[in-house]
Image 1 (cartoon, rainbow, N blue to C red):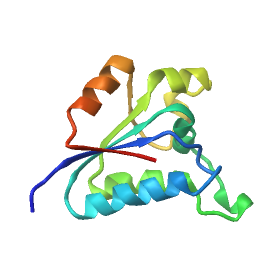
Image 2: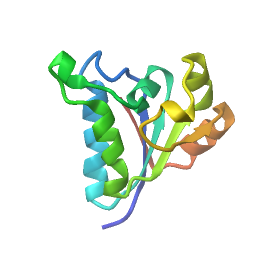
Image 3: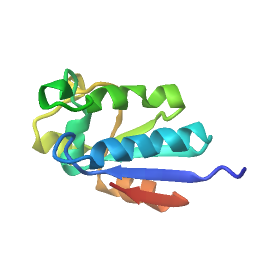
Image 4: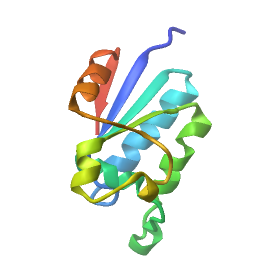
Length: 120
C-alpha cells in the first residue's frame, strides 16, 4: 500500500456537533492504515485541544481523550493555528498535548505539502 500524506483540518468546537469526534476518528483510522497523518486545529477547533474536558457532562465522549490518543496511532504531526489560540486566550499550558503552533504562512505551506486534505 502506498503511503499518502493526509491532513485533517479541524475547525469545529468539540461539542457543538458530532463533526469534531468524527474527524478525529477519521484520523485514527488513517493512522491504523499507516498513512502519514497530520492534524491542524484552526478556529474553534482549537477548543478540542483544551485539557480537563468532560464530555460526560453533556452525555458525550470526551473529545480531549481522543485527541490525547492520536500519538498512540503514530499521529504526531499535530499543529494549531497560533492566532486562533491567542484569540481564545489559550496557551500551551492549557492543552491536552504538545502541538506545533504555526502562523498562517506555515499553515498554507503545510496544506500545500499534502496528498489529501480533509475538512471537518
